[in-house]
Length: 413
Image 1 (cartoon, helix red, strand yellow):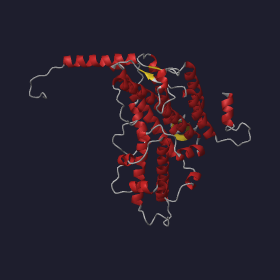
Image 2 (cartoon, rainbow, N blue to C red):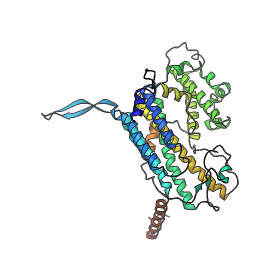
Image 3 (cartoon, rainbow, N blue to C red):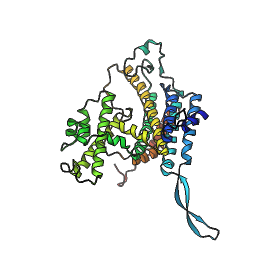
Image 4 (cartoon, rainbow, N blue to C red):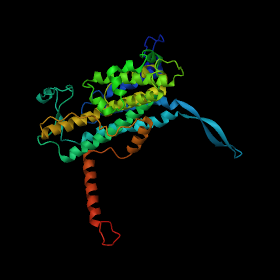
């Protein structure tokens, strides 16, 4: 850790010449690199080794300890010796860190416990690299071990337990995404990113995309179905162009220069409408493709951000988002293998997340709602789940056995 903190103080410039990165970026890189080294080997649904678990806990605690010393002044009441109430300024942890660091630690613990829950399962396994079954894997996850399930498939109880685990981790994923989105939205947009933008949103989007967004009747779901999003590169390119157009429109709406090139052709109301439509597209992209790399805007914000607290929140939420997405993917691999064993017919393409009803994304509101929902018990092994499931059935039987209905007129049919 002496070596690690030396790198942080030197800004990763080991020559000591003062050409290193900022403290904010150094801490962000340290958290990212720690997660990459600890979780890279997590290709199976199994508990982490004690060594990796201890390393992650100790080192992330050391890196997060910086936030304990990021404070702000707030008014507090004190009672003097004479019994008079006086208001003084006292230092306390900065509000955004006070709210989000405990929430992220809770999400972190839930993910580790979810992996620990798989220690008791024995219905599915993984093929080794030398197995013939492993060599048959030719999809886009060729580097992952092949899932092996019984010839008759998983039991109903195990399948329900896997779905329960997937939904629990999905809540962690959405909460991590909400915190990350909130922190990124509060980061200042670097000047060099703004200077690289075209003059108007039309140039950024391209003629075809611009016309699709500015039509009278717009459906974001239908809009995405008309685009070729078959590769990660194409998805990221669309996200980059939409984010750039949003920044352009917001700057023009906030600009006081009445002689702006767009001012005479597009009204303020239309710009707000186009921006709202672009935001809805971004929301769908984030929900449907949660595992895509960071956009140019996000990378630029992270690289030039000088706020140490924001950098720690962003990097910590980002690595938890990545880990939870990977755990969901590994659970889905087992469910897909089970489905293929029961019905060899190739399944239809599916989205990562059910989009449901579309609404404008409010990261702060989403975070608060998800964190309150996560208070329900989520750590549950297969044996715990079986006992919990049986207790619920027994409770229902007992309740139905004790229920009686009278023939009074007030009785509901």
